[in-house]
Length: 402
Image (cartoon, rainbow, N blue to C red; front, top):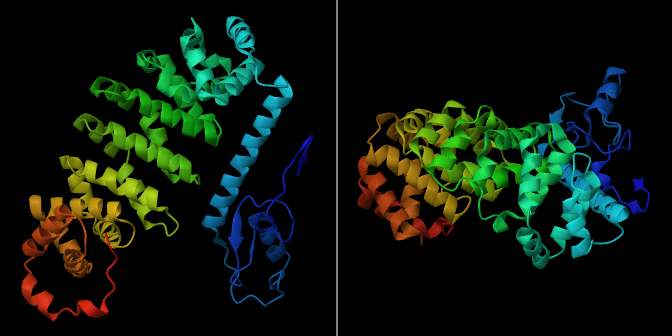
């Protein structure tokens, strides 16, 4: 892949063995070889019954999506896009602009200013000192906010502005103007139509302005915003998923916001994330933390505790993912089974081999709080802990520290 002075080598595993192009939708045959869906489908539709790479006769022509490879390809493509943008910035500006040049760029910003914004981004990325300089410049933030208030600037301009705000998050003392309806509409536009990097920056920007109950409520009540963020949990970019989960954790403290996000069906999306074999540790931890927060309101409790499959997924993370994941999972189970004595939650935990894990957990070097909650769960589920413990051979069982 060549682009002027920028050459980027494509990893061989990202190329389809048939077309030799980067795969858009990688799928695997029963032979274990992965192809781009369009290429292998044409091969099979032509009457072939063999694997093109190995020439083995296919026992099955089922095409299994290779989600893990697709995520890796997407991450690589995003990286390539960033490198190309950086190369374009250097090519357009020749060098990082000086402070005097930046003053002129800001002074003459107008609707057709993509090149100027690119140079300002280059300047801001260069150093903390440059970001301080921009923050203290008279009229800088007001000009940037003018673009946020005017979605007619176009998606490319808005993406540049969001990138600048993301770089300057810690320098913005008054973030209330970003809560204006027009600004929130512009952020929604980026979430709907921007590239993956811009979407991540927009989510981080939203989290940074959700500083109190009033701001969280404004964000939660903005039409289409929560729905779009819930949708992002199904996208193939782990960084975007993680940013969105962090945002939801930050804003769901008020009960009214919890109710709003539950209405937009966020709990089934968290269930989906927990059921995926390639979900990262960080995403699992955040999904469980959010479920724990949602379980503190009635609507969340009912939906979580009456879903035996979801409770099973939560129970599976105990002693398996990380100490943080275990703590959040146990807190959810403790709330349902012990604190509120929900019968359906108790039955789901008891029928999913949850008792064995709780007994193991009580013998591990977990935190006192987790050990206490585990003991409470054992008691409420009607098991004689001392008898079970005496009959359980802990010497032959590997206990993962939590």
